[in-house]
Image (cartoon, rainbow, N blue to C red; front, top):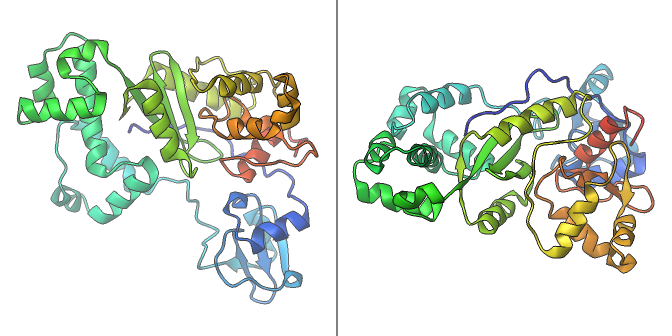
Length: 363
């Protein structure tokens, strides 16, 4: 999967911290959705932790909260060795760039475990990384890259024989079997078939996976969201197409617009989106697109706009099933009381997105 970083972006400033009661509840329940939103210093040990830390919890009167690593370090605390709050889990490991460069340079090459060891890489480490970050084994990722290039070659008029050779397959039967499994069509029918192109995008609030077809963007999800695998399955089922790591003009445009959004210079996305769902889900998502930048609506507001005040829970469920985060702004929906409510990407991200959109004057 080609890295599609949103480069040269300033880190978002920390928005105001939640109320102490909310932070205490999050810390003592180990709520990972608050990771990055605040840090907890334990006076009796001099250690500071993430909210999700699994170490034994201290007494409430022995903790204090900080909004930034800088603040907690200047207060004299040192980092917990268990939850490692100084490590940024969203950063790529140092070895990934060299591996991706080789895959791009030799797309037909079959990188075996011995090849990885020659590059100084631990095969088990590579497997774990690709499984956790991409939802694919390393070999499945490489295979998908080869097949996506074969699809493009055939669509552009190339022969199946050329595609077999260029994709590094030793036999037509093996190529046809792998191709049909991925794209749901034989190579000969590839001109009429398509694929959902997947790209990796780095953002100031963490890495995301985006997907696009020729019709528009169909997916934009945080890579650590628990529902990501289910969302990928839904995309594959809804569009009847395979998922392949590959560039696409819509992904390029999305990357550019995300950069402008996080830079504070874009308030309305214009990249086309395609979001099929149930009739009710599609009506909810259409209402989300009407919420102005810098404003919020309650779940009840959305239900009323749909003509059914009693559908608040159904609205919340549809909101949570939105597959195109940020662009279809489900983060702009909050509880009637004004509290944040839920967010699949984590409450800390929801707070920061709203903070960005209100010019630093929001939640």
